[in-house]
Structure formats: structure tokens, C-alpha cells
Length: 369
Image (cartoon, rainbow, N blue to C red):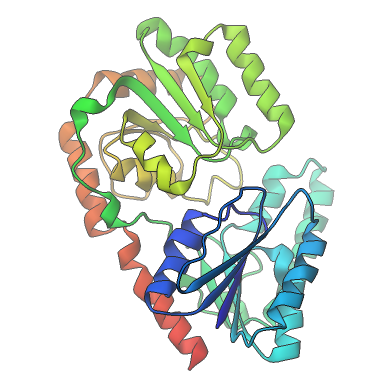
């Protein structure tokens, strides 16, 4: 029995559920999977027992208490957590049962503090120092670390004796099938994922205002949840102020299993990110998803993106609205079919989860041996 716990991701999160949990289930590990979400999904099957608590009814502290009670009823040998808010839960269970702790790090949290905190630089510095000390204390109890990107260092894992297992968020090569390019929507763009100021969504809306003057049939699909209500209002206000509502299709979060039918219908996948401490080190999963969906790419000139090998792409300077609009126009006008095929093959050969999954199984075999 192993226990996997998340408190801030959708239950069907691509990395947690569709990649890691399904890989472990294929090896017949018995898994208790705890989530905190208002999305009603029961993901239980033969090897997965999914227990979800409502995020509107329970605080994270209440959730942790409820999960701890449930874990104590089992003989779980591993506690695999996906957020730092779960530090206390993992340590308490380890002290009570001796279970091994796997710390799965999705983000560089120090960069997140510098990106999202509204405090002045001195307070930010103190918050970073506090965070580092807190994580270092927790790491005394950790057995293994998984990281989603090679740039994630936080409190510097290696100096504390860890050799983190790198599991990048590549899609499954099984998703790369025969794409019917005739059925792609002409002059269509798509972005999916979280939406906040750091993601450059407002700048993308402004760029679209220039694009439709050159290509009147251009449309943009924005799929995902907004990080704040204020930012949602800002995006909608910008769309209405520019009078381009008929060119913008806003959709809420779509289940992972359903997103692919939207991706393959669009001509261009766009990553509109602004430059900030977080985007300077994080590689967006959507880069590889767009490649696997046969989309041409529009992406910012950020090293975590441009370090990968891909073609059929127009690169723009982050935050430069005119440069972004020119990149979009050129991507819509130029159909680089050879480059698209190159990207599809690159996912099949290199940028796929199947190249990562053996490392996850090796880690679990090591922890449980």
C-alpha cells in the first residue's frame, strides 16, 4: 500500500494522476490517492482508491487532519506528497508508522515567492529565507525527491545529500497519432492552462487586436482557470474594451482526457508568458503537448523553452505586444508542415513520458526494498 496526497491540483492532474499514478497502477501497486477539490471525479479503479474532499467545505488544515486519520487506518509504506503545505502530514505519519516520504516538487517555490508576492524586496527576501529553513527542516525526514525540471533547486537539494530524480512533464507518445490536418480550424490559436498576469494573457488579448486587423478570421481559445477573480475581470474587460469578443473563446478547466480533442483542432499553440523569476526557470508542459498535437508554435524567447529541440515555431520577446502579434501573424500565414512532422517525431523519440516512467518505478523499488 502506498499513499499519494495532493491539496492544490485537479484530481485528474496530468503529472500526478495520468502519468505517475497510472504508471504505478500498471505495476500493480495498491494506491490510496487523496485530493482536495470541488471537481467531482471518482478516479478509483482496481488498484487506485481515490478519496476526494471538497475544497469549499474544508480548509487545507482540516483536509490534512482528515487524511491523517484515514492513513492511520492503513499500513501505507510510502507517503508521496505533491505540495509543501503537506510537510506536516508527511512528517507526522513517518513518526507514527515509519513510512518512507517521497517529496515531489513541481515548482521552484523560491521563484514563486519572488514572482507572486506583492511585498517589497526586503520582505520577499525574509520570506525566502524562512521558506528555505522550513524546507531544510522537512528534508531531514525525506527519503527521496522527485523534481519536474532540472532548474528546481529551492533550498539546494544536492548540498543536503539528495540526488533528485528528474521526471519532466512530457506527454505520452501514445497521444501522438495520425493527425487530420484538414480538420484543423483555419487561423485558430489555443492556450490552455492557468491564467494569471505572469502568463501574459492580457498581453495576448492586446496582440490579438492587431492580429485580426491583418487576419480577420483569426480566433483564440483560452482554456483554463484564472488565478484570481481580479485577473479574470481584467481579461474580460480588455476583450470588451477592444470589441473582439467574437474572436475570443473563453472556457473553464477541461478534464485532461478531453483536452486533446481541442488541441488537435487548432492550428497554432501559443505560450504568451511574460518574463519573471518563475518563467525564467520553468518549462511549460504545453510546449510538448502542442508539439504532440501537430500545432505550429508561438513561444517566448525564454531559455527553459528554447533549450529544447523543436521547429515550426515563431519566437517573440516576452512582454512585447507588437512582437507577439507579428509572431502570431507569421505563424498563421506560414504552414511549416515539415517542422510540424519533426516535432511529432521528436515527441515520439525523446520528449515522452515512456522515457521517464522507468525512473519512477526504479525509485519505488528502491524505497520499498
